[in-house]
Length: 112
Image (cartoon, rainbow, N blue to C red):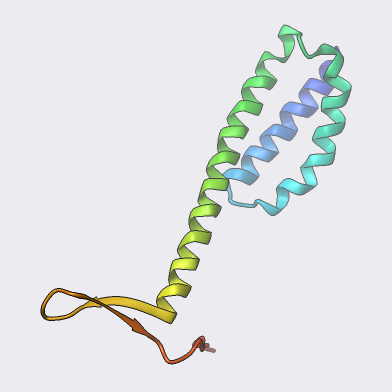
């Protein structure tokens, strides 16, 4: 097994981690081809004990990526809720009954 390949992959995984923690999800796409190339070269050594550290780094990044995906999903849901609130919202009457209020249109306020 080539130690330089392991070091290269470790450095790449660290760059991936930095991008994930920094919220720079667009940077991840540029790392994919490079990561695939190194992993393909390391494939014959997949069972090697020397790759234990790489597996740990990859697992750490997987957890970060899953958290980022949950965050993006939550943000999309929140934006949907906000758009819905612009069109309609619920309020209560003095008797405690729910009343749905619809807005007059779908205009979005724009500020300069």
